[in-house]
Length: 287
Image (cartoon, rainbow, N blue to C red; front, side):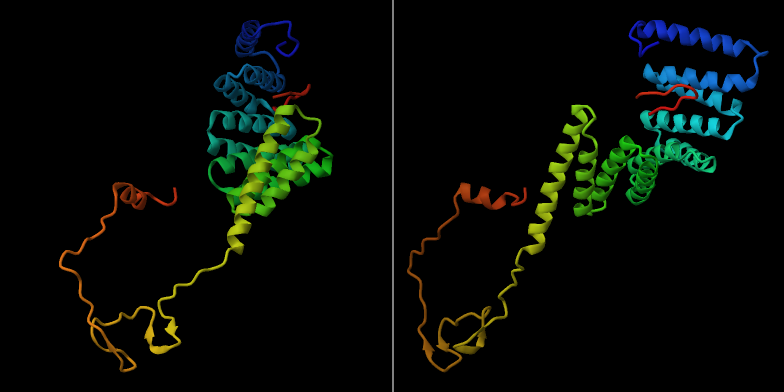
């Protein structure tokens, strides 16, 4: 209803609420039919961005689904909804279960998307190594099934994970691949990837310059070739004999020695820190 453009959000919400009330009240309906119904209700709430209501509907659908493929779809939808809500631990658990179940029934494409959702959850929890592994699984599944959208999304995730792991050359590589594979996506997607690619390039070049910079060593122990016993840190005496036996004149200061004091500008300079979502018909899955 919402995607057709013929009904506003309030009308869609009213229809969803009426459908939910009927489903809750009708105990005679085959429970096998209620599972897909509640899943569709969850999809409707999700499209309206009513994510807590979407989670409630998906949770109602889950025990009513008898087929593993249906269960995997609801688990995947729950993972997506929890990701949007910022509940990444719950999202990670549902996506992991969905990936395992999709794999057990041979749904490779949906398994790849579950791996992508799992990787996002892990990255948000700071486990970038595990996120990297899950993005690799997602990329392989997308390549196996010819899922172009899944491929560039996985490459984008791999670019971000590599950057977090300090592997800037890999980050650059995967952002380039993502950009090359998303030519049919909206301009906003390409612009985002161009910005990420440019940032990765700057970071990579900075790391390269740092790695090639010469190392300056301190000169504190360099010997004077004319006076082997006199190191760079030695001080000339103010009188008496030098190391080679010659006398040094006594250095005297005038009565009114003028000490040059640093100006306020100089003090300030010295004190400064030098470093300054589309759905498909049938048993629907959030994409």
